[in-house]
Image (tube, rainbow, N blue to C red; front, side):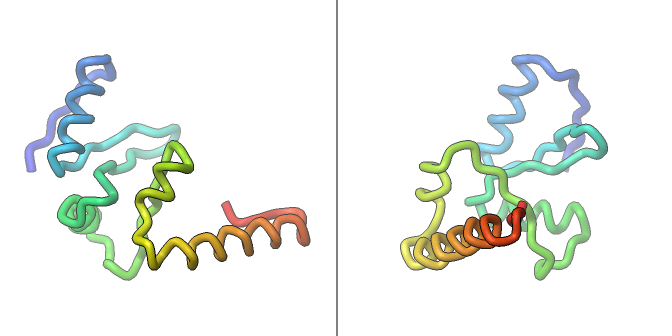
Length: 102
């Protein structure tokens, strides 16, 4: 894996996008740390994140999804019902206890 450090520009963001679309991994600066980004639907890319972090595969990663319709499309048909129920339970818990799962 080759490391490139770039200033954040329109061109470098497009390069990062291309790397992700090609199954690669990019480091993303946040307020406190650097995160690793990849296509969550690309199994090899996700495995690369686990390997880069030395993270056990039973320790799940966080997936960020911009739009709800993208979220629905990402789930396999048999997972949709389970996920819907989990989200509904989270919303119900929030209304009962004044907080939910974040």
